Structure formats: structure tokens, C-alpha cells
Image (tube, rainbow, N blue to C red):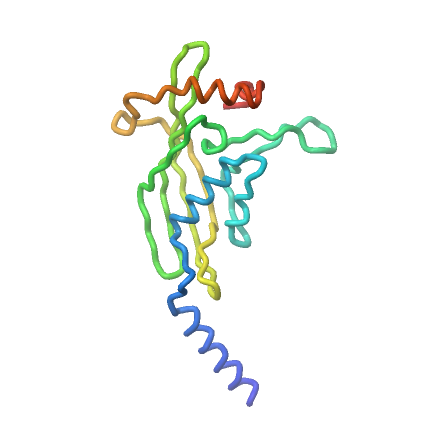
Length: 182
């Protein structure tokens, strides 16, 4: 009987603690900004430190070439944040409650086409579902899905930035950079 009362008391105390505002709470949008910053680091980035247990990634940010060998093939970066010479994103919508957040993000990546001597842009629509940890109050990404989409005329960048210098810098750092699947 005492054990049941103790467990009931602990359960009510933990619910009071989890409902309280945590001074160290971070905004879900900060977590998304950190996600993109980690993706941009490519090999040095660790975006999965921002994910919840059971994380669902419907569109992985990195894939590996299947060479038929027992080891992984070269990495192919599929996220705009990792591939683009310049990357930007805008938050399109946020739905937020005490424990979950649903955030839709519009991504833009700017690239340079050497043969055409011009800059072009690619767009993607990304959906994040975040959950708040009960005890720490930290926001973690529970699910992520990116869908490439055509850029509507109202969202096109005009004029496009000149990406030639950024492209030349990347070529100096990695001569094979333009052969990576874009």
C-alpha cells in the first residue's frame, strides 16, 4: 500500500515538473537552424544529435553509393544545405503545442552552371515534426521529410546572386565537387 502511494506521489510530482516552464528551453526553430548548420558541415556535421529516439527520416540527407563491396561507397549528399554553394531557408508555417511542433520550411539552394555561365536555384519543401523531452524540456526532431518542388514565380529569387566565385572556391578545395550528384 505504501509503495502504491509513493508511486502515485512520484507520478504527480513528475507531471508537475514536466508541465513547468524550463529555463533552458530552446525554440523549435533554433533546433531546425542547428539541423541545417550541421548538414552544411557535410562529413564533420552531426545532425543526428538533434533527433529523438525512433527518429523517422523519410528523405535521408546522405546516401552511399552501392559498389557491391563490403564497405560503404562514397557519400552522396542529398540535402540542399550540404550541396548548395549558398543555402537559405524560410519558415512557412509553425503549429505548436506543449509537447509537439510541426514546422514546414521552404529551402532554397543556389548553384553555378559553369557551361552556361549562370547561377540557378533549386527549391525544396521540408516538414519537421519535433517533440519536447519530458524532463529536460529540450526539443528534438521526431520526423523529417524533404520534397523537391518547382519554384513558383512568386518565390523565385530575382536577380539571382552571382555564384561564380563560390563555385571557383569550392573547385579549389575539391576538384571533383561538380561531379557529385546534384
